[in-house]
Length: 115
Length: 113
Image (cartoon, rainbow over the protein chains, first blue to last red):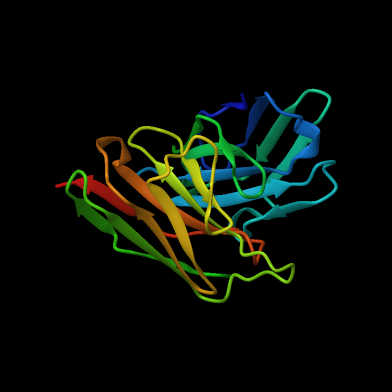
């Protein structure tokens, strides 16, 4: 059974940083693209970033380019999202998802950016 | 960027009756490889999203056969043949043909009358 468990969400001040993690199990992690998708409170879904199998290709939504970095550790079956220069509009539940087509999702981790 | 437009925003349905959700894209979703990368997701209240349909009409494992996807080009539909109480939630379409960025529709809320 595929399991994705996010962690690292917290309350952070504007301009601050946070690193999200996603622990994957139940599938061969190193053979799949992975994605981060977010959902602001009461809003719809927004794709944030994805990364290919070996980490050599990374793509981002324009609003986070230069501030967020997606990465992965295939030896540890883990996906990461380093978030810098956080803004209020980055407040959301962040989900990790297996594949570009988001075949499986974690339970999400809440990031709140507020002073 | 490809804009995905869903309608209606809200869909009150009687239990046991059919429901239909429309998703339109601002450009054709036919990829150069011949596939059409249009997916549907269900998000029940308080839960994470779950993929129901991939590449227009392929049901994911464990998805009841009352859910079906159809369409082509820029016009797509998710149908529920007979709505059950557990189908309440918000449904999203997402395109994966022209990316980045991957883009979602705004969502359709299905509720019981």
